Amino acid sequence: MKRASIKLLASAVFLLALATAIGKTNHDGWLTAWFLLFIFVGLPIFILAWIDLGKVLRSVERPSYVVRVLGLVFGAPQALFGLVSIVLGVSLIGWVLYNSFFQTQPQYSGGFLTFGIGPALVLFGAYWVRAAFRKGTITNDSPTA
Image (cartoon, rainbow, N blue to C red; front, side, top):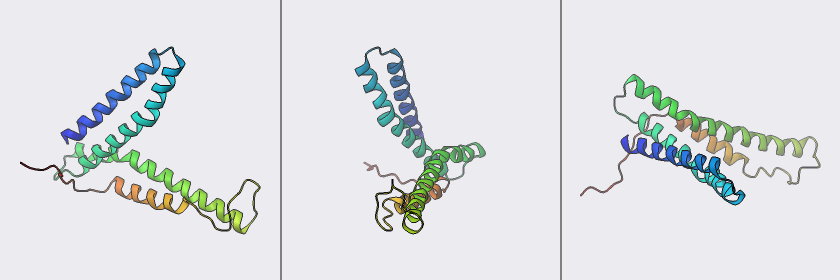
């Protein structure tokens, strides 16, 4: 649990450093670079560290009440992303079905029943929602000497 906590803390410090750089920068090029790093590197690392800590907290053998609640709280972003994925997938499937069977809209460029990534988004989202609050086991893959 200590290792996952350190990862989350390090990613939060990295986000804070990038936010500070964004606030102090006057040059447009550097501002763009810091902002892109914040959005595409810092936030994903922070979210993954958050989810990892939640998984570690939920895998504790005999958790106290506080650890159990923290494990559920740290599973919330994963469940939220899963729900967003499900909504997007169902929306894509609904759009294709509507355009295939009812009325083809001018904006629709797909063919008959071309669902694309919609079903994969639904399956991925369902897995993430299901795994967000499941008590799991953490295996230690590090070699022992």
